[in-house]
Image (cartoon, rainbow, N blue to C red; front, side, top):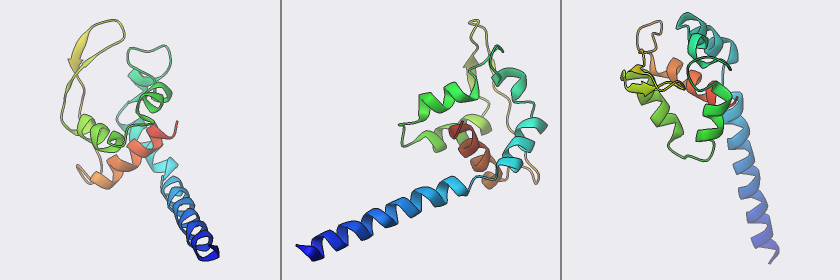
Length: 114
C-alpha cells in the first residue's frame, strides 16, 4: 500500500512540475511585443470589435486543442465574425523572423493565460 501512495505522490509531483513549467514558459514581454507589433489590441481589447483576450481564454480554457486551434487561426487568415455581426478576414500574425511558430505559440499561451 505504501508503495502505491509513494508512486501516486511522485506522479502528482511530476504533474505539478509540468503544469508550472508550461506556465513559466510564457515569455510575457515577447508575447505583448508581438501583439503590439500586430495591433492585436486594436480589435481584442474590451469594448472593441472582437472578443477580448480574457473572453477568448475563458472560451478555450477546457479545450485540449486550444493552442493548435489558435495557432491555425493566427496563421491562416480565417473569416471571423465581429461582435457587431460584420465579417472579415483575420490578418496573419507577423513575427520576426517571419512565421516563427515558437513566437506564435508563445503569444497563444499568453492569450490563454489571460
